[in-house]
Image 1 (cartoon, rainbow, N blue to C red):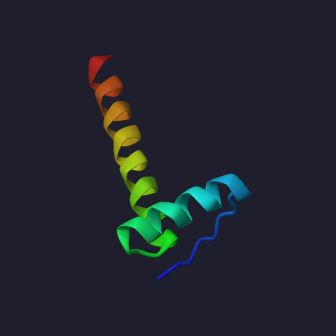
Image 2 (cartoon, helix red, strand yellow):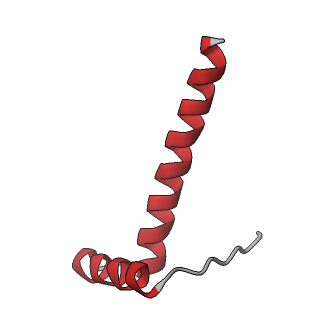
Image 3 (cartoon, rainbow, N blue to C red):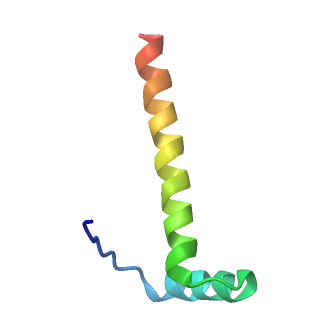
Length: 53
């Protein structure tokens, strides 16, 4: 499995840490869920745009 690392600014890190505490999950898992959701939305939009042509 490949590993990727990202850097986030302090405000974003604080946000994900707070959300993670409230959800009883590590901030990395919260960020991963958010990134995968965004990737899915972008993919769906790209497929839709391609099908409209």
